[in-house]
Length: 102
Image 1 (tube, rainbow, N blue to C red):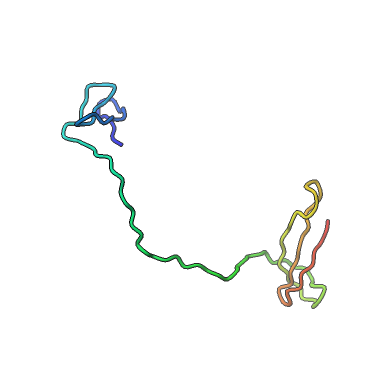
Image 2: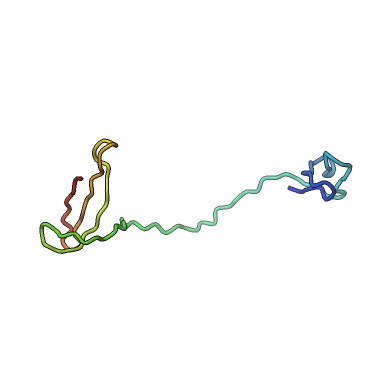
């Protein structure tokens, strides 16, 4: 997109050249041809990681199964919207999962 150097308006394409709709400026010798470019597929692949990776924060919470003192946690709204969410914990050591209601 080109702009008029005199008044700053957007130049519109006329039959043989571009011209300003506000003033008498014409861009001599500038002929713009609108064409679509074909984008070719370069065949470059995208590496997909198939391993399910999730990052959960670790807190100090004692596991009820093995007694380890670190656990991952996440929250889910399991009941109606006006009630507190449910906090789930998973032990870092034995991967035992439990929940805490509020």
